Length: 105
Image (tube, rainbow, N blue to C red; front, side, top):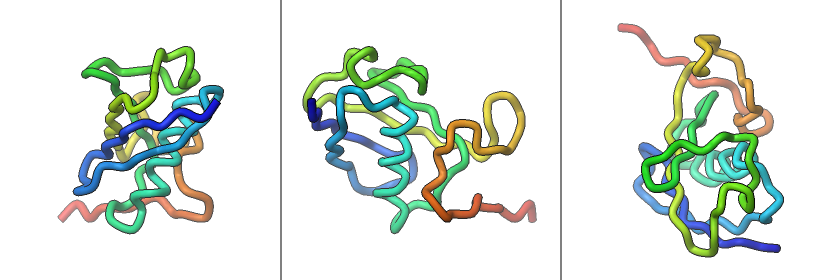
């Protein structure tokens, strides 16, 4: 079943209306948000999804996370995975995108 969600990506100036399936994982929802905002916000390697300030596991589905129509979710991007690596653990980069390398200067 199609579920419309309000998505807010850290660093973006525009809220997103996402149309996702209730069977989609939150990793897929995060990737959808990253892809949609890529024209305004540099893609990130790893992301965390929050509902009401509580982090949700990326392996959960929209339905199992209890997300309902027009609910707000927030995505916080990180340059490194929580395990300290800089790999794309959940496959969140848009297809063909390269990780953003920030200067340390």
